[in-house]
Image 1: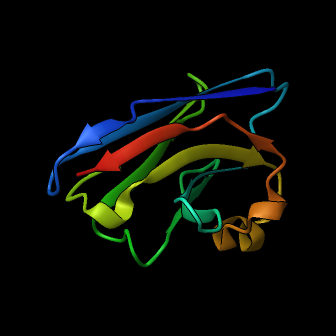
Image 2: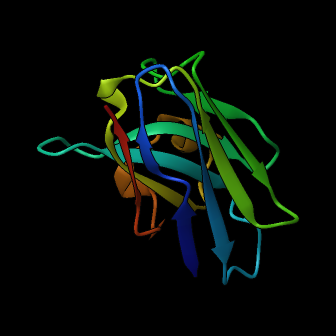
Length: 124
């Protein structure tokens, strides 16, 4: 299984970025996928999660600004980030695993077994 993130970069406050996650190696469609982020000195936290039918869950800090989506046929997941601010600066990771929606929407890091290497987002 391989998850590869792309789309990070440097953006000014108020700007937008779109992250992508390419998924390969699964013999089935992972039920739950998510975007997480980790800023220096802080714990990794869930940004948004999405289950296979498209139902989504968001952290309060990004609601109304970020939008998660997935294309199961193309094995891809995206995160559209708008109105970025300096507090959004972090390494962003995509993750996937199979679990119930109750666990998926909670976005608990230990519940996700497959991770990408991350893509850096800097808002400055």
